[in-house]
Length: 227
Image (tube, rainbow, N blue to C red):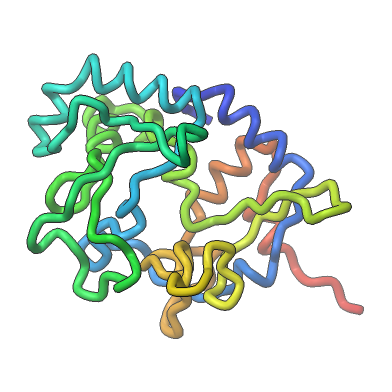
């Protein structure tokens, strides 16, 4: 798998190698992501980064600032900022401009945008990779392209992570006044007229499988054993 963040990918691979795969969750019906409909709603708060990803994006902005700005990006001096009281790093955000948000943008999401998005929601990092004829996700933080797939840490007493989807009633970020995150984004919320998640997220599952040395698509699509 191609990525600028090999140590981050290595850590994720260790989680995935022996992880449980939530077959039922990947039957959840989703609609494929279309930028015209969602306008990158999932990127409203930027993305949390590993130290390696944060350093890599700082270098990227330093070397490619003019090119990224030519895409219409409004990049601040610091495109990567500290968060959670200095305990984490994430991409910076800016206030959303008129017309930048989806018509059904969740009311509980702040009206902000990741600074790497242009006015119609395209990711400048991915756009640059595509123009350079490398993998579109080469420089993107891993959490960006994994979304809306969730990798949950082992439960207390357990030893295996869980690869799953997040339904509205089990969104781990759901709390009073905040209905959740992944389950409220266009590519993560259940849609009655959609297709099973393992079909919609085929490319993401293939990439995760390459990381883990597993074929998640084959595992999810294997015939069920009769009792």
